[in-house]
Amino acid sequence: MRVAALVVVSVLALAACGKPAGNGTAASGSSQPANPGGVIGAMFPNLFQASYRADGQIIREDGQTMPIVMIRSGQNMRMEMDTGREGRMAMIRNAGTHQMYTIMTMAGRQIAMQTDTSAVQDPFQAFANHEDNNPHIHIAHGGPCAQAGEIGSEWTVTNDEDQTPRPHTACVTTDGIILQAKDGDRVTWQTTHVQRGPQDPALFALPPGVQVMNARNIGSMIAGMRGGNKPAGQ
Image: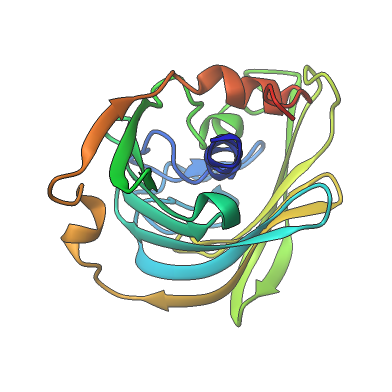
């Protein structure tokens, strides 16, 4: 279960699965109005507008990598991974309901851990809280970036109130696909392949006969990671 917990935290810390926003968000100093989709000028892309399958990997502090398949369709997200000893896992989440299910096999039974992620910060919030509203948050919209044959632009946010302030940078396409994420200088996520197109709705539903169990709220785990602390058990 330790690996499962770490994966959940890593995925949500990627800032790609929080509360949906109806508009793109303007960076500090931008005169652009809210954007209903895509990106204009200095506006952060809407992460909930594209339907796609992306292959990528989470990169841990010790350099080990975990292959991930991310499937998105609007507010729905599915992530598939092989955790090694704990076997294959899948996570499905609807950003509108804040409900996430981690599906795995234990003792020969397929179970789904239900988690309330409503306490997880909106991924747009850091970009919405620019210097005019919060002097501790600093945002920079950088130049173009490339990964997996895709072109995006870099966005960096730094919060002076973090226990260990450091920049968090994301390379994001105009239609909201995260190509790379960095914590300081360390790459924590990178996409290796993107295939756009409609996704099967069944991918975002619980399989028949699965046993649902409740898991504790993981908002505190995310807060601990952002503050420079690690979840218990590491």
